[in-house]
Length: 85
Image (cartoon, rainbow, N blue to C red; front, top):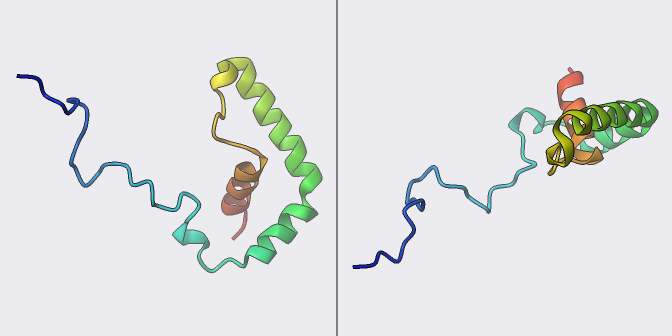
């Protein structure tokens, strides 16, 4: 008897939910998006420099596998989240 379902599939509630919003962060729920955009504009030169250093260093160590899903926007989101009170 052949099992049509691969053994790695799961009916678990912990399975990946593709409808879930990846950008949602409850810690930033009260943050005005305009304020975040203004902060990014004000610090664009520094953020660009930091992004370049992060990207270059990571690529030197890990190659093309580094930051496959990351980009400048996700980096700015991360920097804003962890540097603003």
